[in-house]
Image (cartoon, rainbow, N blue to C red; front, side, top):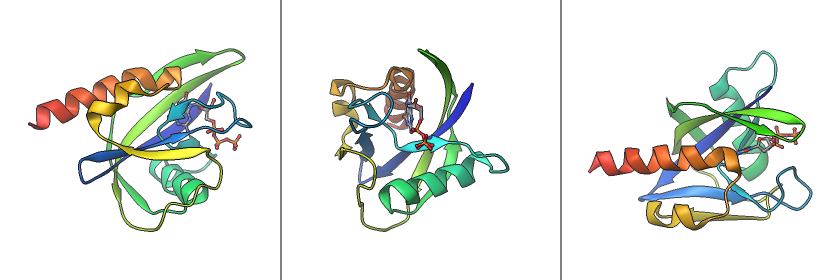
Length: 131
Ligand SMILES: Nc1nc2c([nH]c(=O)n2[C@H]2C[C@H](O)[C@@H](COP(=O)(O)OP(=O)(O)OP(=O)(O)O)O2)c(=O)[nH]1
C-alpha cells in the first residue's frame, strides 16, 4: 500500500491540476500534484515538500478530505487530498508535462488518474455547498 498525498490548490476560484509525463507511472493522466509520504514525515510536511520539489511553489495544507484507496496493477494507492492555500512562487514544471488552473466546471472534462475521480466529485460538492 502506497500512501500518496495530493494538493487541491485554489486561487481566484480556480484549482491547480497537473498532467503526468510519459516517464511517470499513470502517464499522461491528470492529477492533483503531490507524491509519496516518506517515513518520519507528517502528511502536511510531505505535501509541502512534494509541491516545492515538483512545481517550485509554496502551499499550506489546511483541510484534509476523505482518502481514496485505488488498486493499480502491481500496487495499491491510498490518495490523501488536502485543500491548500497558495503561498507564492512561480510554477516551474520540474516533473510534469503540463499544468492548468481550471474552474470547477472544467474538472470533469480532464482525463484523470482513476483514484482522483471520487476526489473530484467530493471537491465539486464542497464547492457547490459553499454557495
Ligand atoms: N501525486 C499524485 N499521484 C497520484 C494521484 N492520483 C493517483 O492515482 N496517483 C498515483 C500515481 C502514482 O502511482 C502514485 C504517486 O506516485 P508519484 O510518482 O507521483 O510519487 P513520487 O513523486 O513520490 O514518486 P517517486 O518519483 O519518488 O517514485 O499515486 C494524484 O492526484 N497525485
